[in-house]
Length: 220
Image (cartoon, rainbow, N blue to C red; front, side, top):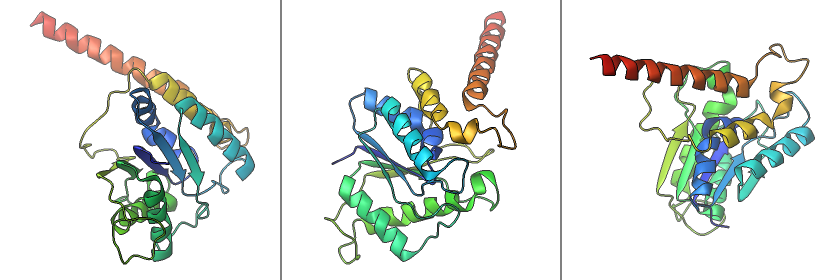
């Protein structure tokens, strides 16, 4: 089916974290939305079956129209021509107006610089171009999405724009919280890491900062 907004995530939970709130907002506004997981997350905490169930639960909260997994291999994602063509085929299949992918110009290493993160960004960026080329060995009718945007922007780099998800942030956090094998696993080195609690704390701090700024402006 045609999907207006299509996000590609390196692992189950990445697209939720990076742009789940935006996808929920777009759905609320009447658009169709979807997530394509590049891998099944088989190297993470929990089994692929558990992660698939968590992804399905998150998809229900975000009210996604499409969720698929390409299973390129967790920790083994490579920007090959074959993988570009497979992703280009997905773009042709779902014909999104806007594509989202993880930002790719990052220092290599843990976190945002994870192999699968930046290479997924490279694959999707190249596939975005291949999808409209007549001679590309890609299944489906030619298609050119209107735009590609990136999430997981590294600290210190100014985003091109931001999207207000104030009306959707609770569903966004609930979708992230579905991935309990990643954030609540008892054997995880940092079991105290709770994304919902961290986001709620950050929101309170930001609200307090805005109130202080408003108070300072009124004093002037």
